[in-house]
Length: 371
Image (cartoon, rainbow, N blue to C red; front, side, top):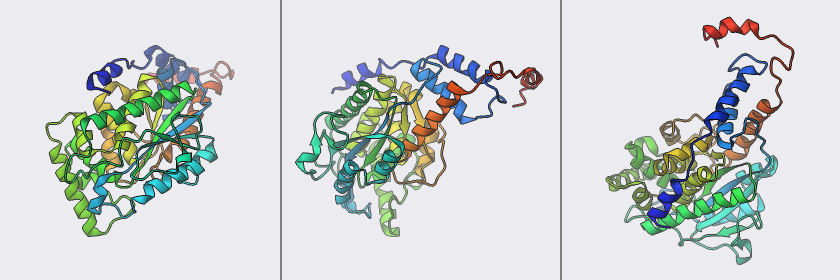
């Protein structure tokens, strides 16, 4: 994929359907309840109307796209978890033995597992070239055996960054083709809290002290070293555009995730943000294609400190506050059910007229905006 091809694809993104959203607001106002009493559930149903162009929506099929890749920066001791865990957990996704795997099984979600650059290969029999041909296999889109060490050189070439974005677009297209109502975006890649923090610092201008967390756990000296690496990487991104920033300080996983977020908007699909890495990828996607943010739905507030900075930059609020910080896309199956409930209220709840309740008592309250 070239820059020109990416821009051509981005130019096809449509704004949300304002007429459908207006009709959804009017229906919400007519439902037999005090206006605004269902809070974010009302907002979700209205946004869904904008995405689909329909006031009433159903969530019938949902999946989590999990981008898996390794990061050369782990050479710097920025992660307490061995790099081999990237491959081990990717294999465990196929067996549904991970956090997102267990939640997906519990809530009836599928997984689309994609190898975009794991250091070591899984057994050959676990790979497939065709998305959704078998959701218990790994789609092989391997770019390289992990990125380079961003502390010493650019993590990837611009060509690799664009290729990763293209893989994300391809997976979003596959989600659309398979008839999914909604999808979420997760990841697996030891060291990707470092790449996320570096990207977030580069995008927002905030220092590592505000974007770096301890990830899965770090001793004090390693944590300070991680902050220094992130600050230097962000400095090296000055003057670069978003693709240049991704190439300098990102990862194959995050670039592919950004592509999938853009793809959701291209194919007019609602898409769910998971935690810290996912929200940084979503912000990168929004910097590349501002219109794509309209199609995003936040799931949960990550415990990682940089999450707030990223979600606020997107102008969004997470739905769930559960102290989660696993990643993988683990918040997505939970959010699917929340969004399904929001649609259920819009579809099934009676209006004042249908419930044979007079709403005259609300007129004066509405005039004074008492809700």
